[in-house]
Image (cartoon, rainbow, N blue to C red; front, side, top):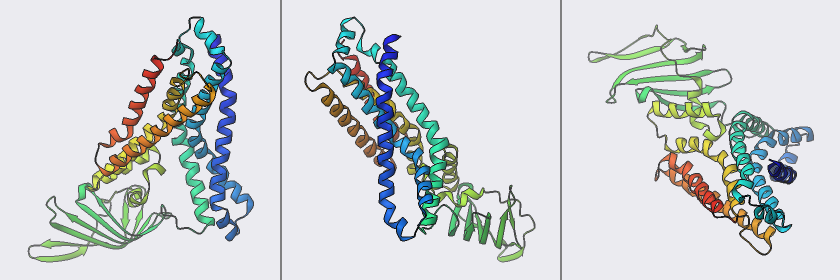
Length: 355
């Protein structure tokens, strides 16, 4: 439709300017927050620029919803201020139909944001964090670690590792305790070293201690291919689910369930990975629904009303996620409740807009 093309033609230049400015602002905030430490450690300028470059995808992800909000509110407010939207409504075209292209754009932006975060933001953010930790001499909590204790197979198998070398996939100073469902001791396997073969852990001279009658006997364990816990099992407990791709995040949930550990907080963050990209659709619906509700200072009031509604949405989302992580509400509800409520409110306001 001609009016759809006209609306999008008015929208996109403002959106491009808005997202460029917001991305630049976010990059500068991150840069100035670390500039003194970069200078203290004499980090080369090219490496600082490289770190900032890897941060751009994350900045785009952050800037996308607010840029859509600003551009849609500004575009509709400007059309109202120039009486163009009034002429369109007088011609018999409903406001909801006229803004349908923006709603579709919000849906597309939400789907795009989910896949963009999973394929581009997470790997580049990992590179950015890795470079920052390297040049600022900070410990990488996602790499090798010491004193690792992991429960697997529903808590029946407990690994105690003195040091886990994630780069070489080597467990040093390993003890494996097997117990029954009641928690009674079955056996203890000790080995100075275990190497991941790709399918199982190859233990070096493993000694197994197990009961034979009333005596605890020790013998050399011949079968070492029975321990097949994935190497990531020994590092995921120190990894934030928001730093993992969706598939790896679900594996983290499965690891915790298998180990019999709490999963509420991780599940809430996992579901939030799906609900957060819908912020683009939510803010788009909110900004559109605010259009035409003011008779004076239309452009300014539309921007302020849309921004206020978006702030309320983000605050409500923050509170619901906090309640979900603490276990007061189900994780799924904590992630999706604000999205559902504000989409319904936006659609109701959109349905009652001027025609």
